[in-house]
Amino acid sequence: MEQNARVWIAALRSGHDRLAAFTAGASPDDLAHPSMATEWDIAHVLSHLGSGAEIGLATVTGAPTDAPEVWARWNAMEPAVMASSFVTADERLVGWYETLSDDQLAALQVHLSFLPAPIDAASAAGFRLSEIALHSWDVFGALDPAATLAPDAAALLVDRLPMMVGMIGRFTPRETRPARDTTITVTTSAPERHYELELGDNIDLRPPTGMSTAGDLVLPAEALLRLAAGRLAPAREGGASITGALTLDELRAAFPGY
Image (spheres, one colour):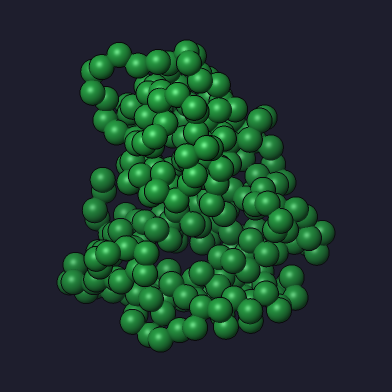
């Protein structure tokens, strides 16, 4: 996995600039439009990203913060303020990363409440990039049926996916997965990667073992990322195809989203 923090920060910048450009031209109707995230309109997706940026900056700098208070304050904003405030808050977070020297980036240790040990700058930026990339798709996908994850983000995030799938497996119920244990091969494009995906009592995405599998899933890397995040809806499959023991509907059920 890419560990150069500057590469991750550059992808955060491009993701920020893309959403900031959207908000600059967004109409009230755009902001009120249902997003691809269940129960949120586009303004509330931007609010979620903005509050996340505020909390994220406090986390990486070690500043005290009260997450429920932050969420309540953002939720009380008017839609247009949610959008403009997202741009301001996210600029602060991305700009903070950009001002760090190489030595400061190398020394950075970030404590996240859901992880047992501190993580480095590249890993911390990676968690934020995943959030920005997926929720950006929630915005752009609502307005454009052909929208995909940003290519620079997808190229980085796909190599974090085995770790993320393992985390997903620990937090999703067994009954969402096929009743039988099934392992399939997964081949992605843009970039090309090869995995095995095990679904059943365990959920695991790993390098190929060379053992025979029960089917083959072929899809762009960005579509695999959306699948794992519960965003590979019918008609939004990005050219995914599957043969063998499972269907795309069974895969969607195994990854209900977050």
